[in-house]
Image 1 (cartoon, one colour):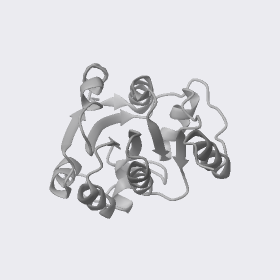
Image 2 (cartoon, one colour):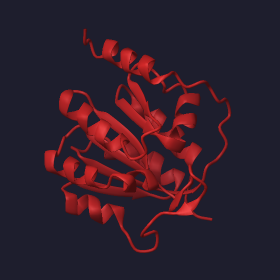
Image 3 (cartoon, helix red, strand yellow):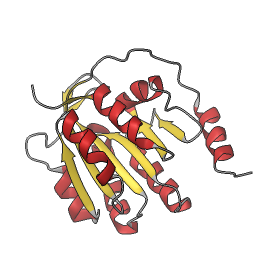
Length: 191
């Protein structure tokens, strides 16, 4: 089976994150948090499938000097596909939209996503106005390509071909949404 394990991809993204603000949704939340990334510069978007890109866009517009990393899923993104058009319209130079593509709604039972065999999210990103779109399907490529990719002016669409979930070594409790929002507000110096 070709592609990345989600846990490997998340670990590579965590290693490259630096001080970026992060917005994480669905199946990427647990490995992201287990790697210590659920800090005051992170918001987990759960319970509102499809909203990670919109939340990331709002942060990118509100904080133009902060780089924003969005970890999204293909099924989640398809729930609010219009967000890509909004991102392309605003063209925030500080937004990096990572999409884990496995072709299924993994959270709700593994149903195939619409257009699994024919839709091309990278082409949709280009047509929507993203400045760059890149894809990775191996850990070696991802590790080698992330520094350059995360230095491009956004919005950048990053497609990751995911072959499986992988194992989370040390699961941790996820802070509640109110705590996450308050922590980010404080980290960004908002009173």
